[in-house]
Length: 219
Image 1: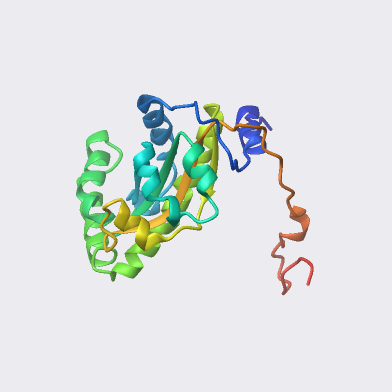
Image 2: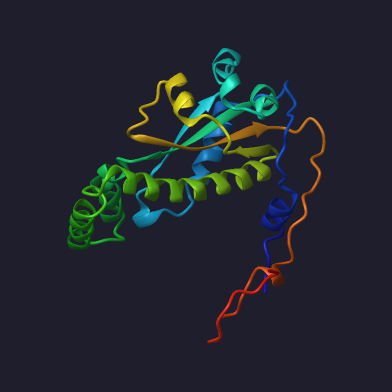
């Protein structure tokens, strides 16, 4: 079995960083490269519900100071805070997305029409809470992929889920009915080497389903 050592190294060397080197800035072109790779993450029916708000300027970060409790160190020292959002209206672009498949020759117009109809009848017609839940699931996938991509580019990250969501959305002028705040990802270069964090043995976390009942692990 062939293993991609670079990917394995990125996974093993990624650690959450609390304090970043404040002198490090990330060029916008490079940030866009990393986000482009991150958006290769999977999403339900390829509807790509994730959206990104990048907060770099000190004055903009200051607006968030009291809203990211216990995470001010990451906020002020990082090169940027990336707010990952789930768009409740993501399915509105279904024609555009599946039209790209037709143009690429990977889908027939008939199949496209079938999926567009199905999306209109299910996702678009669903309550906002359901659409937010779908978008949040996929936004979590893109967040993890972004952190691994950042590590491959030589940057460090810290996912942050503890913040005042409604207040952050208001401070950044984001429509909180349409968009769901999923998490911040602080990004930059660590001011010091992050220490590894222990993991439970995988043998205590998995169960091979062979017809027996129960979940493995300590009680």
